[in-house]
Every structure is written in C-alpha cells, then in structure tokens.
Length: 164
Image 1 (cartoon, rainbow, N blue to C red):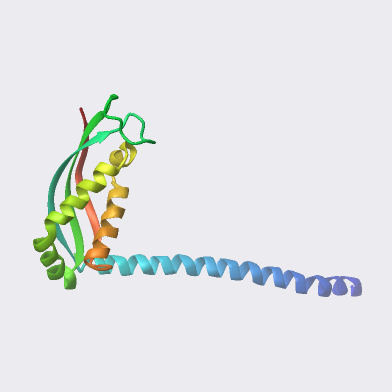
Image 2: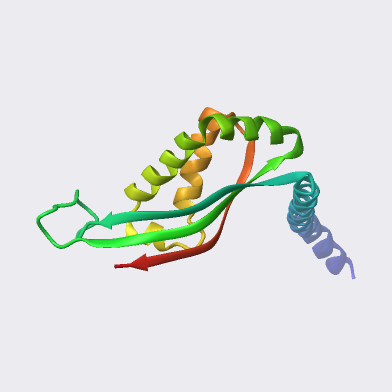
C-alpha cells in the first residue's frame, strides 16, 4: 500500500499540471467561441441601424486580354464581356446624410472608379459572384474620399457576366 501511495504522489503533480493545461485550453477555446458569438450579436444589432442607399444599375463593357498576364495586344484576338449588376451601399443611420451628400456631389467620380476597377480586373475577378475584388477596391476608394467606416458594406445584386 505504501508503494502505491508513493507512486500516486509522484505522478499526481504531473497529471494535475496536464489536466490544468487541458482545462485552460478548453476554457480559452470556449471563451473564443462566446466572444465571436458576442461579436456576431453586436454586428447583427449594428446592422439594424444600417440604411441602404441605391447606387444604381451598372453595365460595364470590359475588353479581356487573350493572356491576362500581360497588357492587351490589340492586334490579337480579344474577348469582350459585359458585367451587369445593381449596386447598393449600407451605411449607419448617423452617416446617411453625409454619404448621400457625397454621392450627390461626386457620384460621377464614384462611377468612374467603379468602371476603372472593373476594366482593370481579370476575368476570374469579374466572374466572382461576390465581386470581392471590386468590393474591396471600392471600400478603399470610399474610405479615402468619404472617411473610414462611412460606408459599412457594398452590396451587389443581380450580377451577371455576358460574353460576346
């Protein structure tokens, strides 16, 4: 019995240490999940205060190079596509008037940036149903011109890519 007691005492600190490390890992994992759940809840509550602003319907013709790794050679075969979509932006209610004022004054500049972004994109980016590259570049452009966080998100709908 004495040998078993001694054996248990010598292993117990190691076992307890491993058990505590395991519990700490599980606890921190659980905390991360609840933190992200809290973030999701905050985001969903924040979205309730967002206003949608219609930016219009866009049809943009884009000349696609035969080899997307180099500049277009207009003496070789090129493919043309037209990108069609409806564009909206989501803004916080307190930013709505600021964004609308910007759009009234500089909507042409924003439209030019949208066209420029689409025409510099490759076919893979244009075929993306989420238009992530265009969304990202529009966010960068508007943050620089309107201010960070003024537009929360760009929303593309009725997206289609027509080849001709």
